[in-house]
Amino acid sequence: MSFTLQWSAAFPSALFCRCSSRCSSKSFQRHCNRTLSEKVRVSDALSSKETGSNVRIQGWVRSVRPQKDNLFLHVNDGSSLQSLQVVASSHLNTRDLTFGCAVDITGTLEKSPSKRQNVELRARHIEVVGECNPVDFPFKIKERHSLEYVRQFPHLRCRTNAFSSLLRIRSEATTAIQSFFRDNGYVQIHTPVITSNDCEGAGELFQVEPAGHNDSDDPNPHFFSVPAYLTVSGQLHLEVMAGAFSAVYTFGPTFRAENSQSRRHLAEFYMVEAEIAFTESLDDLMKVMEGLFKAATEHVLSSCAEDVELFHKYIAPGHRAIDILKSSSQNFTISTEWGCDLQTEHEKFLVKHCGNVPVFVINYPYELKPFYARDNQDQPNHTAAAVDLLVPGVGELCGGSLREERLELLSLTEGVSEAWYLQLREFGSVPHGGFGMGFERYLQCILGLHNIKDVIPFARFSHSCLL
Image 1 (cartoon, one colour):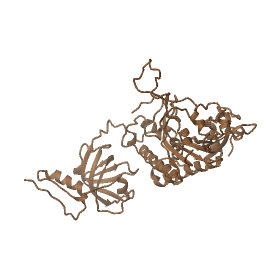
Image 2 (cartoon, one colour):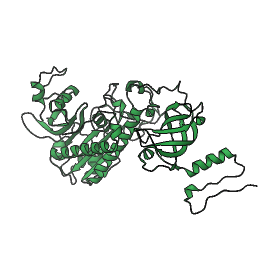
Image 3 (cartoon, one colour):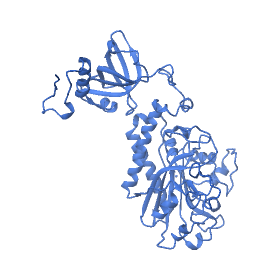
Image 4 (cartoon, one colour):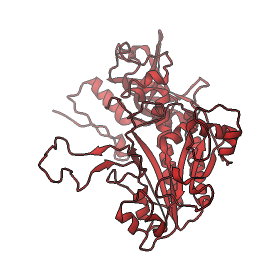
């Protein structure tokens, strides 16, 4: 014969407990403990002002300190930098309760005597869900590992404090960027990842073809009617949409086939790109760049204060370029003359010269900019209506320009081969402009990280291993 034990219907359904008489007393107790305990995140438990509540925590052990009568654990579930201290009777300690193991703990939140946190969890039951051998685990409990060392374990580095903080910051920065554009009336566009165009004109493209397709007799060997590539930018597709919407943006992965393993390069990274119709001023673009930078940074600093404390902080805003470089006593590797492109060493010097705050550089030599940049038609220097935002520690963060909307000039521009792009200027064309911001570079800037591979969940670069 079996029976069912059930709490009164007056209790919320989450508190119902059902157990067969065939269950052992231990499994009955464990089931009741779980059912009667509210599952909470570590961050919510730490901020709780109520003690005495029954809670259930699931996470990973960051430290184990056994004593004669008590067992002390620190458990983290990724919701905060700070871990929750768990205090248990020593009889709950087991051999598989080690640093790095996954646990499911039920108990009571109590006021903590420690000044480091307001509450602690008095455990009644501890279950090791996933074992971890601390000898084989590459991260050691009392060692501070360098970013270079952690980078060797892309599948495990999210277990470290620094990288888990980075991922929380990255998540909040993503939310902040989306909110900025939404609040300012922009329409989000999902631009294609596979495209036929090379927006930047640099030729650093990943070509896309079906695996195993090698039919030499096929008159059209391509899967699509033309060669296809992974996108280097969503800008040209945003220009299409700017013919119907006054303000659009996209936020997604982009790809560059640069054969480099330097700290500045990734083969896959994320770009925030915006396009604004009915604008004839670089000031309009600079206001959006500055507004985006400030709004995102303010949100990150307020939402991830503890996480940001692990990294350096930067905040914000504007001077002129080539004369400053030429008059400086700095010995640059690349000489600085009018018409030369700015190198990273030049960009960083300009930022430092302006007091280590973000700085805008405008009106670049026309020959240095892509075909779509608007010709200022000025002499003798001949410049394009282009702007870069340079920031401390990184150099170029944002790059943008007014677009050449004049069909008669664009038709004569070398590099314009797409008929559809020219046709955009034939039907209801308006002055417009836009910019792109490298998301990983933004994170480098606000956190002060030297290597771009440390600000992306899974780094893709030349000759790297893929998960």
